[in-house]
Image (cartoon, rainbow, N blue to C red):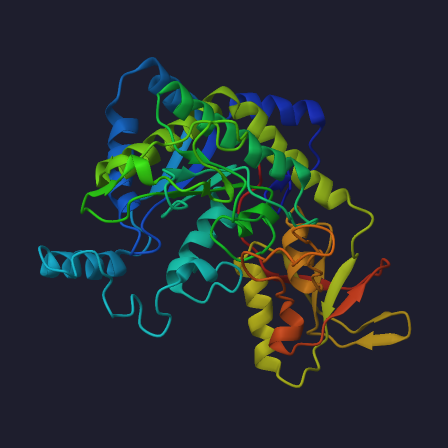
Length: 433
């Protein structure tokens, strides 16, 4: 069997024809997780049912999925928090506090929001997932289930709203739109109304469970599904608001809300069903386009390696005012799948000499978007509701330049240089093939 040198999830010395053939022989790899935010309870109930269906269902659709897709599912990514939520709900069932949240931290020190740890990787749970995503399986789609949808909608699905980070490969952005459209179509054909798109959520920041994969050439999917509590709720049909998620609510003329929900009884089971169908739409698409997904992630990685406009390398000089934090910075990048070299001898770039022990991260990596986005300053675009009007509020963080926030000196090198190095850390013991 022919062997290939592996670089950041991309096989080198590989012709286009060989890459296409390998894609046809392979299977798409799709990731699902549930239960990250413990207060969002339904997706932790959905994932075991999805697992069972994939293993046991004998429909033609599922057989094709099993033939062409490897599905990775984390049933509950925050089990401690879910236990706390479940115990609180049972304790308060039948009282005025039945749908309230517990006044308890879900993880000691970290608290609740482990969805903001996806470039630092501080938590062991995050580190375990990052290892799977960026150094072992390289899924083409990473589906991150969440709750809840905009009020009076059933589910939010992609496409997202602007802006999109310009470091993300356009193949990722269009891939996200493709998956979102497949989900919307499945809901329409199964007569499941209330799917709204292009509101609230962006593709800008680097560090969420579904956003960090964008910078690894992976299609990150977020859905936000209504009804987080096992307690039913009734939505009076005569009380539908004029706008839902910033879109017209009731007449079906809004292109990103074409099939409005008319209200009525809402149940926990509804949330599970919407999540299941969205997941099935994703798997069905992957089973049809498995070879395209595989080839595209290879091609996007190759584009990143071949990019001549980005930095040649980022050098972390050995001399730092806080050497420990410099090592921490290196570890952050290694957890994210970045290859790091350590200089074994002094070397010179221009008129500056670097000592042995300096770290080098070369730009020619398939995860270049991740490397450059975290190393360099961000400039959030100036967006306004209308000319001269108020700014569009960012959904999440707008800047996260790690050398600045961690106080580490890093030199961005634009031109080529030579240095004697060794792998500071290597994930690959076997050749790619």
